[in-house]
Image (cartoon, rainbow, N blue to C red; front, side, top):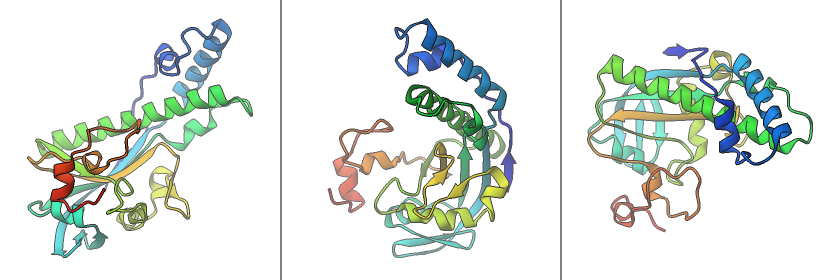
Length: 227
């Protein structure tokens, strides 16, 4: 297991102001956002943990990784010719929840959430670059529990079990409904492959701010996904 703690994060107050569509909101609000960013810059501590796993015991609709069983037809299909995967959890870090925001100030709370999203993105970039450099990975694809009905969010439980106590390692916990705290955290499996895949290609939902690829009905048919 490899742990990445206190990853670097560059925060630009003007970028946060633009992202929150506050460029015309007035000097007072801009000053509050800049103060928020300054506090976040001091406290931010993005983190990630990754474990190398090997694919074993392929069977109908399920596969084992490092001795842990995962149930998903699509994951099983994607790992048909894959031997080694990288299981990870990345997070913005609990520290950003300590950035003071006045109670009921939904605007600054939204800005803090944007900062947390940037911290998570920084953790993922660092993790991806590390894996590319250390393991000479070329093209990669990945999957995340909960991104598709076929691999539900409850699959977070076996994924987290690979690391033992994830809360102790990087401060991420699972709720009873398998949501992650802090909310800007991401878990998943990535692997080297020449076949491009993102779960978004199998999701027909029209409006989604996190969409990374258009819905591909032909690919959905190939995977047996009904829409």
